[in-house]
Image (cartoon, rainbow, N blue to C red):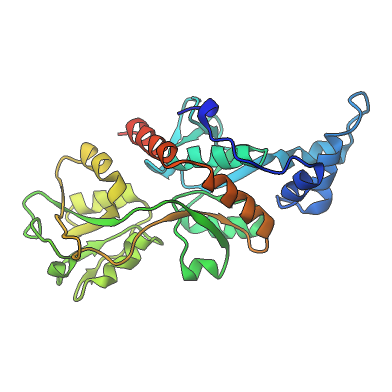
Length: 299
């Protein structure tokens, strides 16, 4: 998995098309338009202050936690898989989301950088223009759609339940068997919202990160916790006491956990371009992105 293998996605090569794509970002049409025009000016002419300021029009600022492996995490060294974290000096972001961000940015003719933010701050940062897109394992929900728009899913996952070895719930095959149990999920995610599908559950107060959830489970603060099934092997490889409940096909959660790119409302052409890029990423490439992220994720 490297830049040379990033799928090439058909896109408009006209100057007008490029301007339309660029004008969606950051400071609005006039500044970005000046940057695009400056790129077509005389090489010998002096660059204006406006043109210098507008160089950011070629940068795609991608909001993420950089703390949600294998989707995204912070790294200390640059590799072919990483992008810089703009607001953390000397740091880089890696993960499945980062590979998707690189593909999206290339398809839009831009260079990606990560902006590290708290999960709860991502939507507000997108609305304020601090970031251009959210690529952070975020699901398209009705509530979030009131604030931002979403692309088609770039990954689809289901939700499982972890307990510790020796738990009286370890052999449960249906989530309803956890009635009366204390179950925790990550704050502000579908992993937390889905818990209420369990009748009679004690819905534990969520915490901000998945590592935090697992720490709470290990400390006995809850009986069980929810998680993304696609990263089951990764979680269990670094937490030897975890047991995944053997939920039957009809005994799991109705809620699934697809992830989509979030963009500010009113950017229909931008959304169409992103969906075009995503449609050009084959299932084989997506699996390669995921497998590679799972292999590289920090312990």
